[in-house]
Amino acid sequence: MNSALERKWWFAGPVTGLSAILAIMLAGAAGLQQPFSAAQWLLYLLAFFGIQRSLSFAGWLLALWLAPAYVTSQRS
Image (tube, rainbow, N blue to C red; front, side):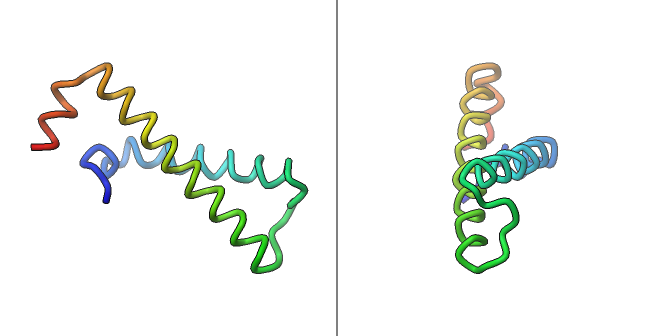
């Protein structure tokens, strides 16, 4: 379930892009340079979605700290 903030293009775009970059860097650090097998793709996708959800949560907390009225008015 995505929040209203996560459906905004100006929030989702940078979070998704940064998640892809960090997942590629993490896979490279683990020795998976190019995912060719299904197991390598699965590891990359798990890393990507884990990083994406973490960055999205951190961004939501930042928005809650900077503009609490905007975030809480979207929830009701």
